[in-house]
Image (cartoon, rainbow, N blue to C red):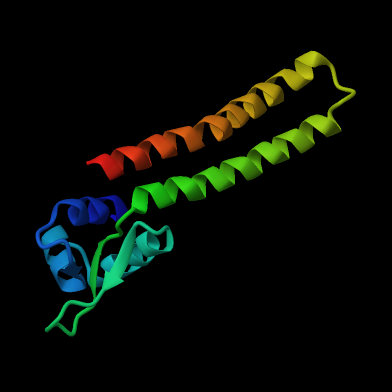
Length: 130
């Protein structure tokens, strides 16, 4: 349901939709809409907005949501890479065969951690030029 809700918010017009509108368009219960909008708000993809002349709470896709989500994911990946480094330290006496999978995983996360900021800079430059 969260995916359907996000998909609708990405294409709807106007961009701001009330719980009732979302419920009607998706054929979903208001409880399901409430649960899933809270989830999407918690992960910073959707935000609550006030619409002049309406007493209902409205929701829309948050501007910059994808960039923000990726930055949060990058933080988690960095933490995981650090845990992998700690694991490799604890396995310093282990055979190369025992360490291989952990090293490969750590190397992948270290590569991603190094390259992602460049991708994000390219994205931001592209957004500014559009």
